[in-house]
Length: 357
View 1 (cartoon, rainbow, N blue to C red):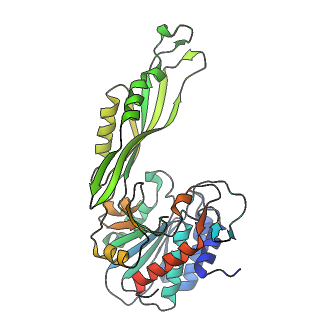
View 2 (tube, helix red, strand yellow):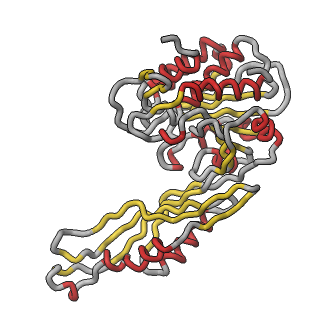
């Protein structure tokens, strides 16, 4: 079976395990490829992340293409492989497919293709973990020229649709306190699980709050996602903790989301905020985004989840999401991506960067 270059890149990337925190071997492999391709001066390493700036004798806008090395732990029936119209493997959709496109574009540059912009490519680590452990933030600090970019494109899986902005996210532990007793005499204690009932009822009844920005509809939601508590099956519990996740719209801050959560709790529990990620605006009217749309993106929609466009936005860089990965396959068992989508995405980026597909 003959594979296109972008398909072969994806298969090779998926063959190297790169769970969050274990990206070193994949970074080593890609670094070696790019140093051979572009020369040592074009490739800078920071931990297990790479900043790649090919030498191009052009001016024009500064564009960053970004993708993460790491994948989440999922179950797979076999090794990375091609079956029919699909390429299977850990990260095939999220987001080694985007990395494969980036590698092909760098090969184009090494062969003398002249871009219409000044491109920089960022391959980074630990995107799939907590916000504070994601190393893109440190890369942006260590390479301040990235903060002067005119546009960043995160090649997250979007099935070749352009996804604008992103929701912010707050995770908090909501602690309900009670007093233990024997479950045969519950009146002698105070049941912490039962104390959460009113809050859970309010949470269940809360409809999504719709926010429209630049014609894009974002839906703010608050969900309980984990629960922990109890000391034994015959003990009235004195502690019960819920993990609550608030997804908030562009234009609002983590502090705004925390205030929403406090209003929902109504003082019935203690709130411990431990993970906060900012939102990002759509940037629909940005001229480089409009030029990208004109090259034939396969759909236009708001990003309901969180991505690193928010990290770029936090340093003043407009950013959007666009990648070939099959979006519905992200974090799935036996993850795959569509082969045709890979080739279409590469042609789209070639038209946008070089004026030819």
